[in-house]
Amino acid sequence: MASAPPLGQFSTAPVFNTKAVARETDVPADTFRAWERRYGIPRPQRTAGGHRLYSDRDIAIIRWLRDRTTEGVNISQAVLLLNNSLAELSQVPPPPVRVEPRAMPQLIDALVDTLVAFDAIQAERLLSEAFAMFAFEEVLISLVQPAMVEVGERWHHGEINIAAEHFATQFMRRKLSGLLNMFAGDTGRGKIIIACAPDEQHDLGALFGALFLSRQGWHIIYLGPQVPVFDLQEAVQVLKPDLVCLSASMPETALQVAEVAQALRHSSPHVPVGYGGRIFNHDTALQAAIPGIYLGQDGRELVEAVHALLVRGSTSTVESFP
Image 1 (cartoon, rainbow, N blue to C red):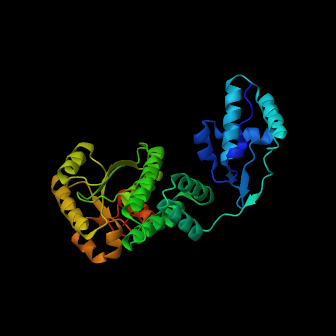
Image 2: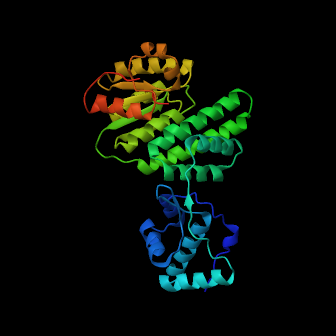
Image 3: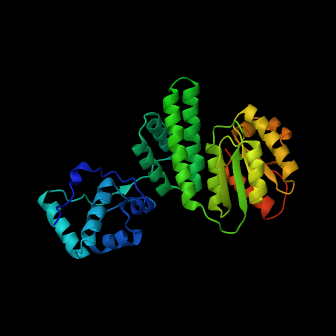
């Protein structure tokens, strides 16, 4: 019989929400919550709002119990063996304590510092903590977006080098892309293509928009950065989407959005074109140059604009996704 895991090497910091634990252990959430109710193992800590938060140590315990039950050991016997081993090693987990959630400004500072220190593991834990405390959309708008803006500002002012900025951006791109894959699906609500201007390399804002719309049930076809106009025209003609959303973050790529939107009007006149990006939020005069529908300053306004256009049939504009 396998001995208890060496739990002393695992952190007891409560950072993982239930979904993250299920993903890391390949054990259904209902299963390890049943173990908790019946046997007191694992022992997640609780936030002030009552949400469970698990540690690396909890994950190690769940994996160990999973392996024993896979070997054919009854779960009650496996728990008894675990408790006996832990008692012998004086490694009985501490009793649960209440954990006060950190405020968003603290989380922003911590996430920025972690990213510029090239610490992907701690950044992942911070995001798990935030998703356990706050609504999904709130984490994106109030934590991830300002954190990435701060990273960009630090690079602009010479406080970090390009390697740190690229690490932070690539980490967040992988994270957002993974989340988009989780939510992706064809619900029949409508098909939306999201693409960046031909020379636009920064696609985090477009990913934000894709996530917000995907969460609302729209079928998102995400094309990412630097999409050539002719290729986009061909995709629109083949896929026949209900809407094309274009993203830009710089003045020169914002002008490309105008060119792409005009080209789409000629090749697919019945497909509406929307646009957004930080540059349009800061330079509203650019909006007049774009032959399309301005989609708002953030993800929430984007969702409302798309709903107004495709559900209510309104062509009124709102103030672009980030």
